[in-house]
Length: 287
Image (tube, one colour):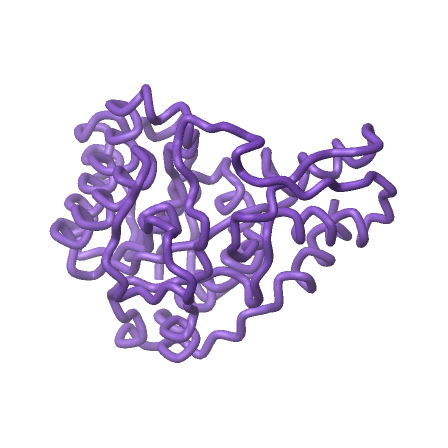
């Protein structure tokens, strides 16, 4: 089995790159945004025509949530149109797609864990373009697995955990919102889940079951709780002042509640999902 990974330079792509080094169940090829410009369909078509693969894992996205509000054209190009083209030209090769989406496709106005069957209702350009990308991919390629995730962090790139580690070592007091509820997702765990699905697929192609799935770590917390646990694990003495979201005005609206229901992905693929605190401890140890 041959697998193409698009977006090898991001948090998830970097985590996948690290983990596939010891995998023998498939041959992997990793490409970055510099090597594959997703802004033009002909680029994707030509690249796919000259690349041999059975499955493609797309880790790329336009993730600048606030900037997307004024950069709608580019956000839609990368989050929606490019995903349509990936699905279309993968289908021409009879190749399946694993695509990573986001909790931002929901309004975040509920108070119970969100199942994959929940109707999407995005409130930002980022969420709207990601939702459109899901729909276009499903239309173009009926062998597509869409995995929505939330609050992604890792040893790589810029993320909330690394920002907190920096601020916690530099400041005596910081403000962190406590009225946004969700679950952190360690990119290393999401990468392992994707590889688990691919490994089962290599053993039997029938194990690749298309559809929409949710994946984050287990448990529930606020951003304040997340920051507090980061400081506790690292032994930082910075005081965290819990504040309302209003203290951090943003251009794009954030989901207030985005806890994802993981039952479907656990049952379908036999996955064990780690508790968010345990994964956070592992990530901090790796830095």
